[in-house]
Image (cartoon, rainbow, N blue to C red; front, side):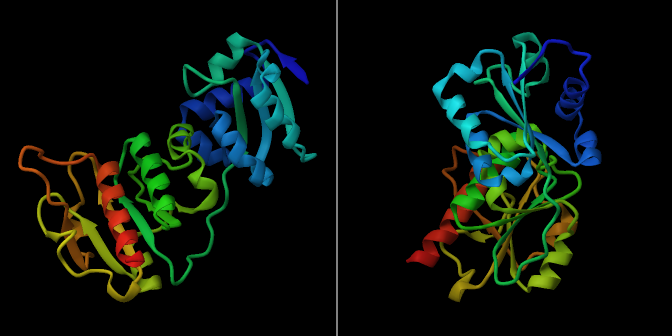
Length: 263
C-alpha cells in the first residue's frame, strides 16, 4: 500500500476540495464517506468506491484490517496517509482512520407505489442525514431535497446518515410538483404552525402512499410548498415545549405512519 506524506499529492488536493466544497462534489461526481460504519456499508456497494484511504498505522486495527480484506474489487485503489496528511483531508476531527472516495450514484427513475420524503430547504447536514436514516428505518426509501437544502451527498450528511444513502433512492433535481404528478401520492406537510393532529386525524388510510414534507429549521415549510399539500399535520406537544427539531419531528411522523400500517 502506497504511503503518502505530502499535501501536494493530487489525491490529497482532491480530497481536501471535496471536503470543503459541495459544488466540487457535484462537479466531480465524487464525495467522501468517512468512518468504519460507512466503510462496512460500502462492502456491499463496491461499485461506488474509487479509493480507500487509511491513516498510517490504522491498518493494524482488526476492524479496519477486516474491512480492507473485503474491499477487494480490482478497481479500488488503496492508500495510506501519514497522520498529519490524513487529518487534513478527514471530514471529522476524531476518526477511526479510514475513509472512502466514492462515486455519487446517478439519480434513478421515479418509482411508483412507493413512499417519499421531501425536504423543503432543510439546511443543516446533520438534520438531512438523520432524516435519511429515519426514513429508511421507517420503510420510506425515497428522499428528495430542494435546491436550498443541504446537499445530501456531502461528507457531513453521509456521516449523519450512517449508511442509509446506499439503501435508498436520493433525488436532488426534482420539484415537489413533479413527484406529486408522477406518483399521485397524497402530500402530507408537517407544520408546527397549525394543522390537524398527527395522531387523531385520518390520513394515509388503506395504505395510501405518501409524500412527507418537512421544512426549514427556522422558517418551516414555505408558503409555495404549503399550497401543494393535501393535508397539514401538527405534532401535539406539551405546552412547555415550543417545537421539535426537524429531524426529531420527521422521525415522529414517519414512525406514526409505520405504526398505523402495521396495526
